[in-house]
Structures are given as C-alpha cells and as structure tokens.
Length: 306
Ligand code: CP
Ligand code: NVA
Image: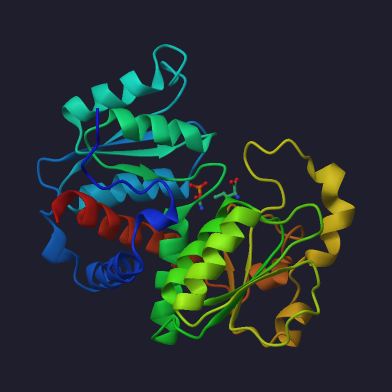
C-alpha cells in the first residue's frame, strides 16, 4: 500500500523550510498554548516503545492531551511488533483507529516497515540512527536563547550516535555549524556526515568531524550524550578509558568559551559530563526537556492538521 501522507522517519523527511517552520510554530505554541487547545480534538496518536523512555513517553502523552487529542501507549510486553504479528500488520491495524503513529524502535528498518503499511504519518521517536524530535527541541532551545540559529556553532562531544546524526542533519538545514568530536572508533556514520555537509554548504554552515579536542577554539554551546546508548553492545567498562578525555568539564566549557551546556538526557554525572557542569546555571537541559513537548506538538500539528 502506498503512503501518501508525510512521515518523519529521519531528519531529512522534513525540508529545511519545514524544520524552521516547525521550530517557529513550537515557539508560538509555547507562548500561546490556548490557540492550539483543540488542534487534535477527536484525534488519537499511537505511541510505540521498543526501548525505555521518560521524556519522550511523557512529552508525547501530555503534549497530545494539551492539543485536545488522545495518546495510546503501546509497550512491547503485550504483543511485541514482529513477534505476535508482522510489523506491517501492526502499522496497518493502527492506521484503522489512529491519526498518527509515533515509534521508538531498535532498528530503523522497523520504522520503514511501519510507514510502508500505515496510511497515517509515522514519526521516529528514536531509533539506532536518528532522534529527530530531540534535534528539533534542541534547536528550538538555542533559537529561544540566541534569537536566531544561522551562524551559531555547536560542539557535540562524545559517542557518535543517533543524537549526533540528527543534530548534524537538522543543524545543517538550519545553518548551524556543528563540530562532532568523537573518540576514534566511536565516530558518526560517514554517509550521514556526507549528507549533512552537502546540506550545510547550501546554508552557509559547516559540519566538522574530528577526534581532536583541540580542533576548535570557540563555540556557542557544548552538547553531550550518554557514552553507551540503549541497544549498544559496548559496555561502560569497555570504553571508559577511551572516552574519559572527552568528558565535558568546567575547564573545557571555559576553554571553548561555551555559553551553554546541552544534553538530551538521561545524563550520567561524572561520566560524559561532570556534575558541576550538568547542574550549573549554564546547563539548559530542562529547557530542552520541556521543549521536546512543544517541538513534537508542532511536528504533529504539521503532519496531521495542516
Ligand atoms: N531524551 C530522550 O529521548 O529521553 P527519553 O529516552 O527518556 O525519552
Ligand atoms: N543516544 C541515546 C539517547 C537517549 C535519549 C540512546 O540512544 O540511548
């Protein structure tokens, strides 16, 4: 069955203009939520989780409720996708009752199968490759603080992962210079870097990937994520010696002149970031967490209502 509705399985399923519009709408929704109180009236959104979640689960549930809709939570204990029935049948059945499907999956291909079978939009709420809802909320947060995104420089320091990929791709669309500093052997996907670099060039920005912490001198913000992601086969014990030099400390914040510290959370104090930085006034992690809801509401509004 062909799917004529727009889905967001990866960051580039939104055009650069749409990504900017989603952020602008999210900022408006946050300022004047009452304007959107009935936007999803009578509509239901299925939310599927193959991995644990706090922020995504609660922000989608509360966010859909704020727009007058209903979110249906589907864990994977009670009939896991692809086990009790095919992923495609899961997607087609959910489309009979729901107006969108939001899914957090182990493998990106599961999203593709859901989208191919569904007749409603499918939204990636984290997979092994991307975390587009996170990137939208993060750039919304920087937009609120700096007033514009073009020309900002964000350094992502740590494991090259799903969050890094989405920050690179959406950052490239929005004209943000992104420097990913990852230990050798734990870097980002080369194909995604190449995609991001082409898009960045069109928007007057750069995407830089290095393992050298001295490669940059000045950034606007530093971003960290866990060193061991959900579903990784590496353990902290395996990698801690390689990753330790990449810990974000107050010295590194000062050396790079970073105004803000960012983290998607869950965060691990004194692993990827020292407790004093994570809990400092420069840390905007709770703004990012709150903005998950506004950015997702704007995305759902764009896909379902418009
Ligand atoms: N940042 C984020 O996606 O958090 P959760 O894993 O708790 O949903
Ligand atoms: N990279 C992390 C992000 C968690 C929100 C993971 O995939 O576990």
